[in-house]
Length: 415
Ligand SMILES: [Zn+2]
Image (cartoon, rainbow, N blue to C red):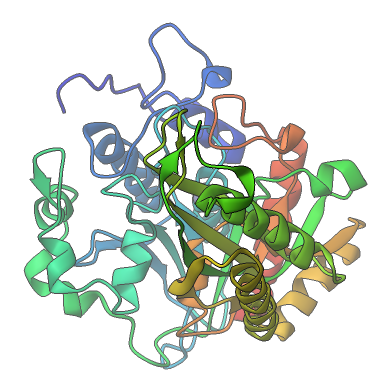
């Protein structure tokens, strides 16, 4: 582990102590926990962080194993061995110059659940998913995706920074040639619960300590290509232009207007625009833009897409330009299990903590787990709504509150 300073672990007890210790792995030289951390998946820092968590898992008496995708599991058996255990966890990899709470809070709180669990009927398994962040060639949720059979052989050959994904997985102790064995079989677990920071500012603004996640939003992406006519910007009269960028701008404004025209939490963005030839003295001949929309309801995403398509056709008609709108991908929304969400809500209230129902606009390993078992997520406030930044922060009191709710919910599910 060249270049990674290993701390003398075990100085501190409890959740806060573990978060503080783990924050030292990948910390900028001379910094503090407030300086953020770089523990990018599959790097030396990630490996050292994973080693730390495995040590903590073993200290709880859990039996630790690493699956073929590099996911770390620690199991504590229940009284009735025939019953499917409850799975609880998150991730400990970060974005470059990230924060010390995204993923870490949920992963270490899961270790604490394991530590404090008495004799439950069902077993409890803590999990740390491999490389959750989109740091390896832009692909995210690597470990949890592999666990639901959504990482194919081609993806293992993708090269990033001189390493194939297969080599990267091998590096953290996985066995890419046996990736299929990482797949979670139907009925293998009773439920999955994940504690995570909100990464937005709604809880803080509302002064509510616990977010009850109703689901992780789906994402629809469309590519819109506007074909006009490039021509001299000085000699082409305004009325005779076929300006692709003007039409693309109308589309951009239409996306905003249509997405805002109905109630709900849906969002729509044009975040990518390409203009050809992109020169000051040429009427734009072609424009290409990406429309992205997110919501918990696939039906709503579908309906918004249809409305935008209709408007795009109208803009094409009025402008006399050819405009194509092509679907470029869909991530289905992942709904939380209503029973688990209700349990989270009731548990928090029982502890005297206010709750708020919300959708997660960011992706999480939990969305993969929702494909194979009932899933629930607990959110706690992010100070200033900031994450993926050294300024990411969650007050210790909020960490403890979230961990307490998580623990009660998991113990309740384990019986
Ligand atoms: Zn995360």
